[in-house]
Length: 112
Length: 112
Image (cartoon, rainbow over all chains, first blue to last red; front, side, top):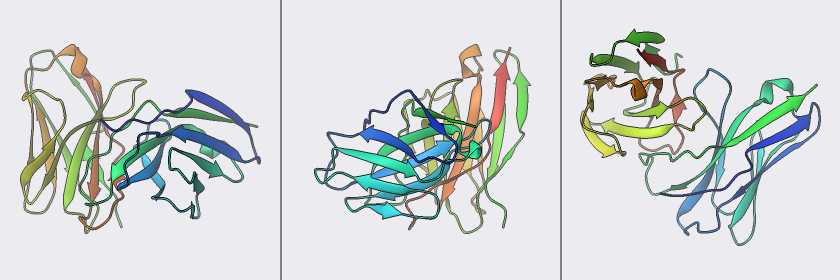
């Protein structure tokens, strides 16, 4: 199984940047890094993915180290609605039909 | 445009019974995957369907079976229910060319 390592939980103050780390030291050259989040009682929601370049979209930024062994998801201005479990995953990018392998994720609590 | 729709939202069954869960994928998506999420855990991949056939399968016994219909909707069947089958069952859909999945809100199954 493709494995990643994330902290179990993190806190962040509302309005501040939330930086969620992920270790994927054995990632292969054709594997992307994916981030999903799951707000309580909802299905997981896609956030962002990347291969080796940094990526940004309307939700977040993804910073991948040059050696690709780790990455950081950045929520630039966290709100209370960003409280969720955040999952970092590795996934081969050669097909849109490859399953996702979820770990335990990081529980982010945004504090008022 | 409706996203992924799952039914029912909640279900209570007795040990030994059989259950069928249903999923309608997002419009334009032809691939459906099913995940099981136990309380406090990340989702675990059960299987994936496209072109009306099971294409990938996770580490689940054959009590778990599925079907995909010509309109791309899907069913998950679980026979001989065990107490340990109590979980949130998530359906995710994707088009073949896109690496992202869209998840439904899930069906909460309780086995008593």
